[in-house]
Length: 312
Length: 274
Image (cartoon, rainbow over all chains, first blue to last red; front, side):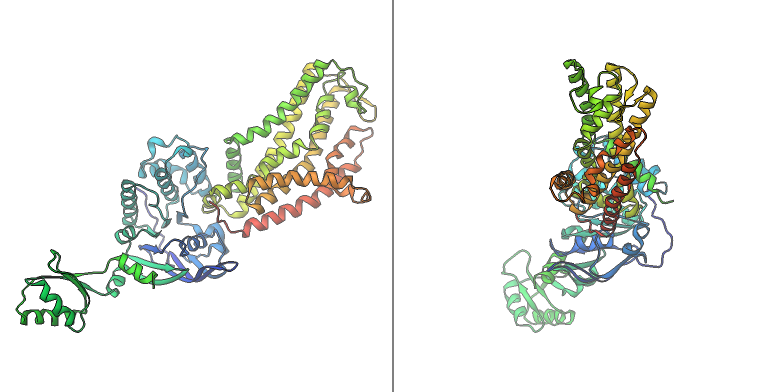
């Protein structure tokens, strides 16, 4: 098992302040602030072209910010170079390897460039990503999914405390996606902080506890995923003895919004409301002689919220 | 412990060893002297018709062959072989996306740059001396390990001639490494292997053309391509050191700014390829 080193750093794994990247006229990243805390599985969400990858590249010191700073465990990769990447690993866009070298040789090369006994972990990381039987094969013959897994293996060689993954499940088949999620979950459970950039909402919903949503280079939300879903407005699903009349009453009731449902349906009605208004609705239904069969709260899905935040 | 530049350099060499492209240049460097010797021995040439003392004495000593090969290859072929790797060494990794892979490990950009530059220069050095070794061996096998006549019409013993052949190649290495430095600069700045390789070779061709333009004779001694012949000073009696020293500082004028500019670009460039 890969052990995440616990050096007790006080500084947060990722702290970005006012990060800007301009390419001539194009503003790719527009004053982004990020706060990834120790132990987070942090989703970095946004549509294609929103600036996620550019932000990650700046965080890893691959491109220079036009303005602002980013620190990894308190160290700025632009000022401190490779030293700032101590305990940090990951990949931006697809992981890239030397196609003419075998997977093991690729890892040996990267381990040599890591130092710190990384070479001794090669067998272990190959085992974790289940590539041991193919380790002697050239990467040029690898499938996309195998390269993604090798990317994770290369990252784990560094015994990271922070793992930055850019769209790790992109291009994988459903089984590959499931395996990738399980692997990320396992690594997070072992104490590695994960920054997961993705536009795959189910992946983020399943794995992440905190998220930043970016759109057109700007952060439109940053915080706990649960808070976001609560802020999105509590939704409710209602089944009654007479859904048709219940629909009329609900639509007439103050504070009950977005009432959806064309009875008779097996799923009843859905609506959004504050808790106190739900109480008033249940009283109104009772007074009208309508029995409540089920009244269940439903949090908005990440997908609902994502589109609400990025399509306004 | 963080890895050293030597570790990065060793891996640059291992990458070169693992690529077919590497052997294209080395193969050319080896095959051309062999073809030359085969053709000359089949012609049964007896010399005195070429306007060059080594060509005149080619059948008298195998040691004339590496000198003639250096004359022939120094102008275009060896710079091309050096450019094949130098132009590719940064740009190819940028294009393939592997540059970002190695720049997110524990080596600094300066270390990666130094390792790549040293690897490109090592390759150029190996190609040059490999070519010289094959030319010497082929020449000696066919025409023998005999005394050789220098540009000053002085006869030197075979062992001394062999030493002079080695020294001549070592002197030619100075402009060849300068071409390599320029190739690394183009590789770093263009982000495109083909453009960097073609640009490096194009640069030497351009300088040859400039050298032919009437009215700029004063500029000629400072053109890089003029330094390709400085090694001939070693094959005169007494040794003519002037062109060798001149070549060394003229080459430095090309190489040092090229490498410094490449280094600065590499340190500050955005790595967005792949």
